[in-house]
Image 1 (cartoon, protein in one colour):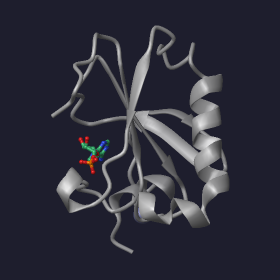
Image 2 (cartoon, protein in one colour; image 1 turned 90 degrees about the vertical axis):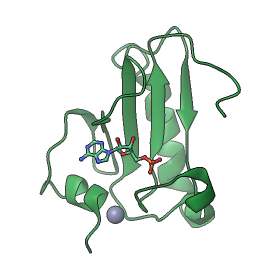
Image 3 (spheres, helix red, strand yellow; image 1 turned 120 degrees about the vertical axis):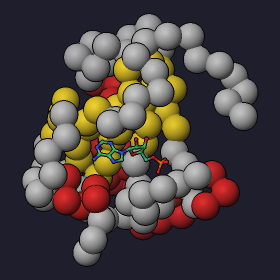
Image 4 (cartoon, helix red, strand yellow; image 1 turned 180 degrees about the vertical axis):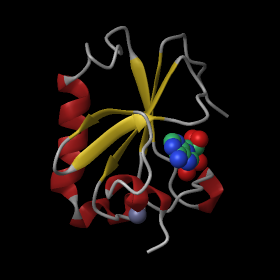
Amino acid sequence: MNCIFCKIANEELKPDIVYQDEKILIFKDIEPAAPIHLLAIPRKHIKDAFEIKENTDVIMHIFKKISELKDELNIREGFRIVNNCGENAGQTIPHIHFHILAGRKLNWPPG
Ligand code: AMP
Ligand code: ZN
């Protein structure tokens, strides 16, 4: 499958990885929108948030790891998780990913 995040998961592409295990990866976004901008993805190709219901274990694992790694990821002062699902939300890569934004005051509402 021609999916850029599957290529990252199977090591054809090598982003700046900050954490990985058998189920997930967390790596630096190539176009950071905040001083800390990471992407957390499952290795498995899950298209979007509508498919979470069949994949709750790995999604729970992502959130558990983010919390466990708060010091290593430098997000202890607070962070935002963003998931864009579908065209109207601006999802550009159809492999579910969670943006982790931190390192400055984040505006709300995001617009
Ligand atoms: P979204 O618009 O929610 O689908 O987010 C896709 C994100 O992936 C964007 O923030 C991009 O900057 C990021 N991105 C695209 N290609 C890469 C890559 N090769 N390595 C790291 N981040 C990437
Ligand atoms: Zn994929």
